[in-house]
Image 1 (cartoon, helix red, strand yellow):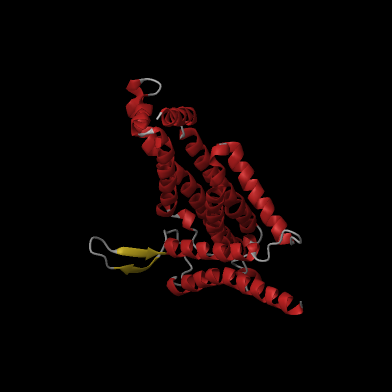
Image 2 (cartoon, rainbow, N blue to C red; image 1 turned 90 degrees about the vertical axis):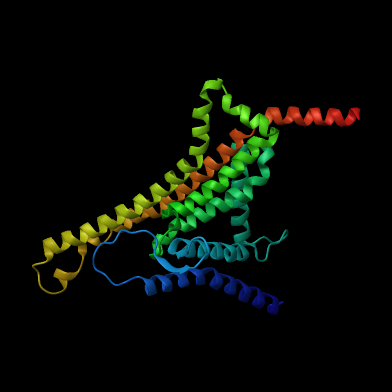
Length: 298
């Protein structure tokens, strides 16, 4: 019995270590590729290296690497949370995990309906990836959600799903939907369709990036204000950035934690609503009933 408990704890510790190792690797890469500078710097993701390709070179950027680090960390975190599941003796982490799963399933059922019940893992993965990507700023790493290319990739995947469910009644029915409610609005409906992934990406990317920029500008401004007020004092009091204590941390709570989690929730909500509202449920049921009736006749 003791051997089982010890092995269980060893596996737990190993999974936790593997969860945090990707973040440590990201910090090491950041230190290696970031030049030392005292000036304010607002730039995009750094390019670590470039792979030569036949048509166009492929740059491996900070946002791509950090995205994979987040995915790997979430993978091992899920293994840790699901380690030791029991139907008779559930642990605290199992209760927490069950609460998360039930909340995600209820969110999907309330916003998408019974037909989309199986979408709960996808919605949970989108929210988890977005939240952890935005929270990378807490450890000084570049958040992938501040890169439009990354978020647009997510939005493009959602757009493919939206189009897939809109075409459940066939391509002819899908093309006819552009003429609703009147045919002359078809060009506007086409523009609205194309604008869906672009608006989703810009909304998520813009809010996360603006929070990062505002926090950096305020912290730099407070540093300059400290030098202006206390710069004439010699010694420790003239060099210590007193005004940078507390205020940047409060801004980080809002922009990094609250806003990051909020934007992840909004992106997941838009994903559910766009897919569910685009699905012609009544027409699909009618088509399935007709197919069933034809099969019975044959």
